[in-house]
Image (cartoon, rainbow, N blue to C red):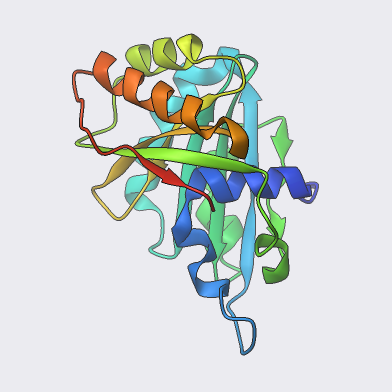
Length: 196
């Protein structure tokens, strides 16, 4: 049975998935849709397999599902959020769960839990396509301590390179994303910080 996401895990999910996650919940009053969110994580040794499966899964995921992948020195993690339809979330995530993640924190989340003040932030840069696993893993390995690189699935076919760090370390995340994009041969001057 999955364990519920911690408040820090929710901060990571908000940063990795971006502003689209909080948009349905920004109103203080009124009805809001259900939210099922959390992280599926594997040891870093599984990164090639997970990096290969994530883009295939995002091409088939339902419209109200949001996702990002984070690459760390010790693990590869996929953050997910399903807005509305908590009963359909297990079916939506079944292809990822078939990869047998040792950590699964996907559970129902109260909307108030994502309206708290964040402790981590993300810098994001749109990419024309998902980079190959090799260069992406190399860029993640070269990221400075305290910065995690990954990819955010935006409105299809949009993919964003993300750098996640503590809020006071956001300039380092911006620099890491810029450096990684240069390594992919896809430099743009508009790296955007995201404080959600």
